[in-house]
Length: 319
Image (cartoon, rainbow, N blue to C red):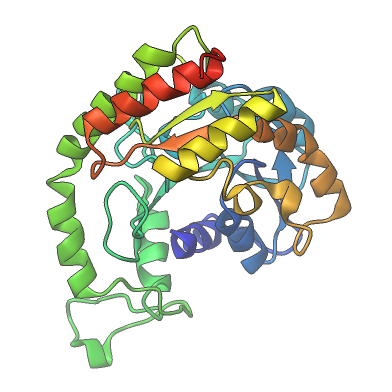
């Protein structure tokens, strides 16, 4: 997925001197890829969907903005209509980072297919996996051609020549997925609908039990989630601590709270300017009030029912 973002940015013509806007709730890889192509990462805050805030996005656009990277975090779509309209108005390209929402939809279309380009990740923690690996999606033949050549040392795979005498038009690098990984990926694709169905059943157990008891992450209109993670808000510190301690003993807390430093730009002082760190404070405060329960197929529906009942007692002080 990381390599896919870098290759896609290069295909979109991003170079030193350009700015690329992405959101503060993210994985560190997106910002790393922007830096790898020599561009300047600009950080935009999130709203109550925990994805890109279109109001903050408008304020971050300058004449140097080349690409916007909305990130569909933890299975839920960015409100794409708003983001795409802003990009179109300002003649800026959109690269969808869909590493964490493979199979999710917006207006009945798969995420990763609505922007100029989209990327997927297939590492071991994703919805479907090849161990390590990713994919790039685009309907633009020129972008497709560049990506295919760049990720394979510039090879054009000219059918008139054997590989040893292949033609070349650009310098490239080696970002190829292995054949064995690709075979695993094709098999995993056949399981995707089953995985999404089972995810939803587990998510709905938590949702049904806790709706009205706590504030649950808002899902944008027209968005079909993959139900990868159940996220809810607990602002009271002692209550939050009690909830986290319970979850850590039973199922874990995924990105929030245990891996927040790798998923919030506020903590990336090693590669962002003070201004961009400052831009991330609002998102940090939002994220620190939220807790994420991973949806895992290896955990039974009965297990999620037990967790939801105990959580409800903790949250209502009936311990």
